[in-house]
Length: 205
Image (cartoon, rainbow, N blue to C red; front, side, top):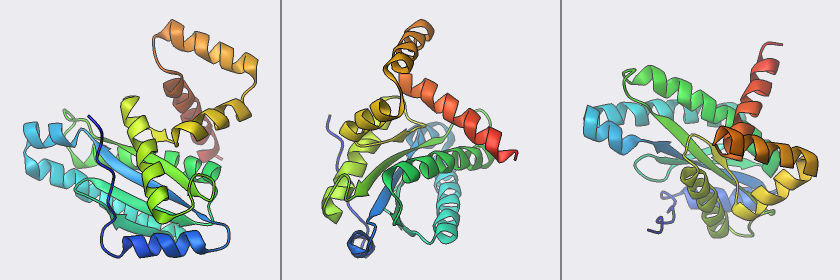
């Protein structure tokens, strides 16, 4: 079943339009909570509301700290507009944000439940030329990450392939593929684990 395209909340679209017209373009981070339906069904709607509130606090703090625009798109879907932030930098910040959301969600709900977040990232002018196209590309990136199991940061499908082949040698990609097959997991999962290790390493400095 096709996933409905995200529709901006009132006033958010104009903020996106303003950001993408500025020099340096902008990146859009589309955030969706994972497992919210399970939380509502097994823990009650109040538990789901707690998870949404916890995520909103983290995202609001991030927007305030970075000078980004924050908006709520739907029940458990949010968006952040990052003016002047290129795609690669937005991806790394989104990965850190995903980890922050996971930590906040763990604290907000009982340990027997699991709640994480998935983020789709797209950029103007790299992926789109208009606010509508940017929303669509970020939504596609989010959906692709959800299809891989969620709790991840996704890029627009075509850009994902370009970035991976640009940053890694053919030998590294072959080893990654072999490892994924041996561990019976996805390459994206292994790359995410490696990125987490790098972030933890430099957090200690």
